[in-house]
Amino acid sequence: MAESEKRPSDAGERPPRGLRQWPAWIGIGLAWLVARLPWALQRALGRLTGALFFMTMRERREIARRNIALCFPALTPAEQDALARTSFAELGIGLFEFARAWWGSVDPMRRGLRVEGLEHLAAARAGGRGVIVVSGHFTTLEISARLMCDYAPLAGMYRPHNQGAMEWAVKRGRLRYATAMFTRDELRPALKHLKQGGLLWFAPDQDTRRGESVFVPFFGHPAYSLTSTHQLARLSGAAVIAFSHVRREDGGYTLKLSPAFEGFPSSDATADTARVIAAIEDMVRDAPTQYLWIHRRFKRQPDGRGALYR
Image 1 (cartoon, rainbow, N blue to C red):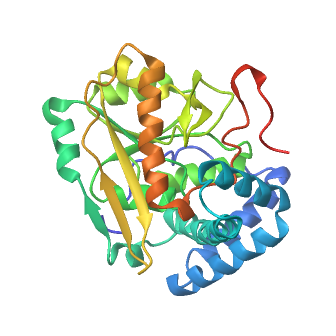
Image 2 (cartoon, rainbow, N blue to C red):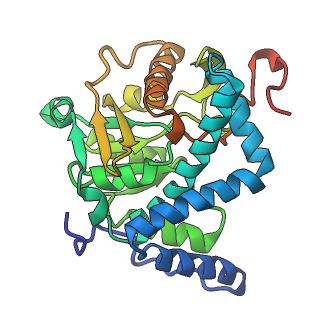
């Protein structure tokens, strides 16, 4: 898709302009400018930013270390620490990717891009069927969604920002490439989109207080996980496809769509959710440095059993 091509947006909504919004607008303006730096410079700055975060964000650093120790116990402490450090460098790069995805050009990312499995998406859409596209919370999440929109008309489901200016700017940025954006509370329009044969992309792999959740295994540990993929598929009749995305060492990206889950949904929401989370676990194993380890993935445990984070 050409950079000049625009998708339908909420252009009729007025941006919030109150005094309380000014700090956010200043930050958005700086991000808009940063999004226009050369990509090679952004990658270098991203690594430095990640290293700075690792040194200064003590709480998040310890959460990442704890998650990695739980998920990769076979690694030595030194190897676990190296994985944590590298994940922060990848996170720093990801911040610049987010800015480019929302407000900049992704032409540099299109060079060397590999897209696999489009035939699986075409097969799932046969007969006008809607498709739910699931991925995990990786540092490449936003840029990969934008790149995939060159090949598939994705709509997204997301958690809205509490800050008005940020919510307006990010939603407007996403609607440059997504066909629509639904908040996690907008179930009816999301279902309508799927029933009309649309594609809906989201990441259901975080512990959240919103929505129905169950405990399913993630790297062998109980993880409180949203049943939304099962529920949306059951109510809409949509197929479900896993979407993995990796930032390669050569600077390129690989986007991969897997075959649609067979026999999905079943009558068992927990079993279906376990299948989705297992697919995301496979993605993490393929690109462990690019997963968002700073989230308290195991903060809730069955029967209130022991806290895993200090």
